[in-house]
Image 1 (cartoon, rainbow, N blue to C red):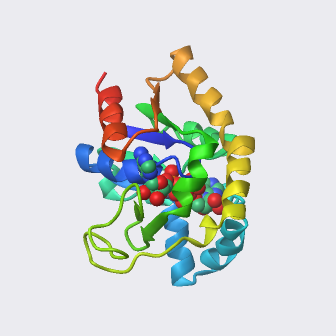
Image 2: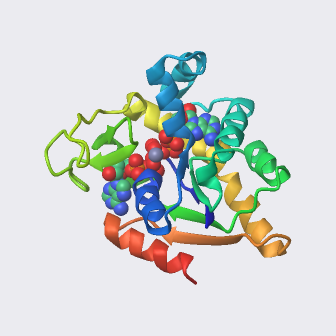
Image 3: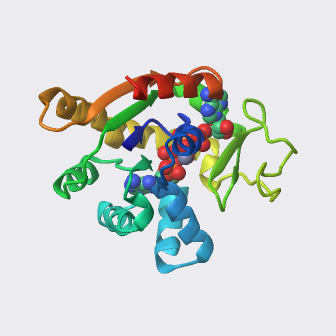
Length: 217
Ligand code: AP5
Ligand code: ZN
């Protein structure tokens, strides 16, 4: 299974990615998690990316494409993978296509902007694993602690309300065009890529049932 998760910031990509990758036993490739790891490690990439991410803007296509190509060389990607947060621009999608990497499904998780702000406001994350929680909608077993490791949860620096608004704007201006790009690709029948859209409103389990159902058709 090779799939791309498409959706606005806060649509639930990371949350659903964890469930989907466990179901299909494939790795999750989250460019956002990779960048946050670089920020934490203080690498030159991390130092450059931090400012861009905190402003809610996108890191350059060249850097992202390089990161992803390198990640795909790892042996765990042999039997499939899930992209979370990549591609995010038309040039990124073109690069993926040109690299001849087949994609079985593009799965869009649809959530209106109004619901996003509330989700981001209550989000807490476990940085090393990328696991996401919500204080109200998806609380951890112990407040402030990751379910698996018991380590501290934090708020992401880019979850401030004004940064979230900027990220939503960037999504509509630069990423939403991928809906059309992949719908056309699927309709043209030149590839075996299927496009599926799932309603992302509802609780985490319910959305996951819709996704697993859509992927098995
Ligand atoms: P990235 O980390 O990819 O962030 P994003 O796309 O903005 O998405 P989020 O991680 O914010 O949301 P999500 O959809 O994963 O939602 P989640 O599951 O956490 O990117 C961050 C930055 O890195 C970018 O702004 C950019 O600068 C850079 N970057 C990354 N990739 C790039 C690329 N390819 N090109 C260029 N730059 C790149 O859920 C959100 C909240 O809602 C959580 O609290 C969760 O518990 C809750 N929730 C989830 N599901 C539900 C539900 N069904 N009901 C209620 N609450 C729910
Ligand atoms: Zn995410």
